[in-house]
Length: 223
Image 1 (tube, rainbow, N blue to C red):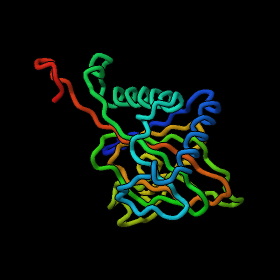
Image 2: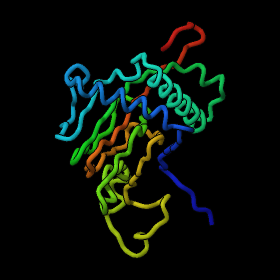
Image 3: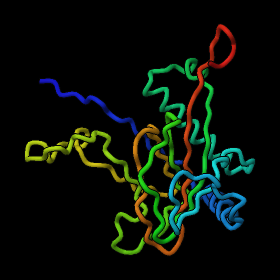
Image 4: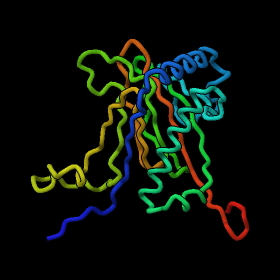
């Protein structure tokens, strides 16, 4: 008998070594920008931004500050490693890809959340946790990053023969609890959300979307 996995979804999770000093710089910079309000706020959000959540504009990775550029380098290095792994690309093949991306920050306070969404015009998305925030006692799902199961019909009929299948085949969604220094990468088409945060400090994350052009060697330009 051979049991295999069809329609699998690749996830990648990394941890930035010795993240505390960089996260401290990122936190101070982000909170300072948040205080400036409209100058850095996303002016054209296509989502309903609830009370308790600040979303910046999408130019974060263009900021020249050292801490931002260090994080950008870390995130993109990990992304290229994932793209190479799941596509079977060599290093030379990866070098033919031109990266495009945008990035933003979220500062989430008590009762802040972000509803289910995906990112249609990108191939890969990522979330980096600067500060997870301290949740109230007993709030195990506070600020959890939740991914909906894309197999929409998998729960059509549940009985003892499929109710407790192993993780690779489950019809349930996935919850990720991010700690400071964690980076998660996933396909941009996958629907995800952030559950309400219940705590007295801040949950700070940086998110980004990426897409790629392929160089045409014959014309020495990008398609």
